[in-house]
Length: 295
Image 1 (cartoon, one colour):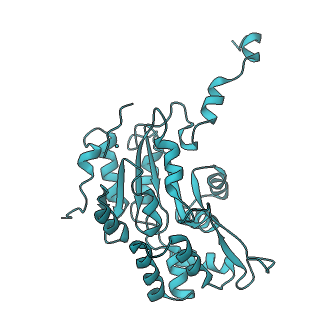
Image 2: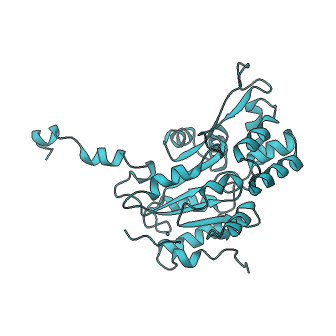
Image 3: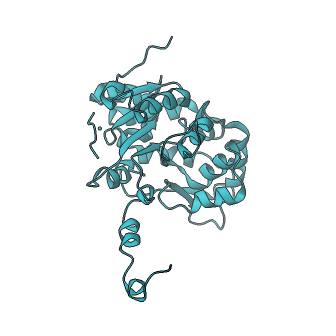
């Protein structure tokens, strides 16, 4: 595939032979294991991208040290004065509520981005009004896995089986996690939980590492990414088309670093653009036009 840059039963003998198709498929990154493999993959941040609000910001602003201190830390990350990992740790350390109470507060206050449900359905393919071939959605998040699963389950109306399946699909949700803080017995104690980072990088979760598993393939897919803020800086250079949320820090970062991007207001804008590309009516290069002028 050419990628634009911007980017009756088996015989006894047969049963004894190794299943090379399965072996080759299982060695691929998770979203590439379907047969045939997908031509397009949509990677996305969770907080403030799939959702209208950032769950970690909501906890910090309302139950931690507050918005002024959080915003000051974000600006230090954008300027390069501090690492995101350290600032994010400090943010969440300021929240003392038991973990289940945090989840409950977020389920009551966090809303789904307008248009994401339609985009989710379109990407599944198989219907007249859907994508011609399934476009896998891979969530790459700096947030915590239990919160993401709880919110996706509630906001998308997933059954317990669907939510469990999403949680078990290795590599389709890659995020940080939560654990019991040293000296405590449970995350349900006040001050009893802490974030468990995905890796040892300065980001806590370096999203570029997951993206490079796909971009390094000899027959790689076309890769989209959508994000909004400081947790997405590590992903900004790694895909063929970057969607940056209008009015958010990722837009300013991309302009400063000369990284091609396209702004979006909500997933309705993303859906329209991805449909145009998949249907061959818009090139990746022509899509990466920076800040959009909305009518």
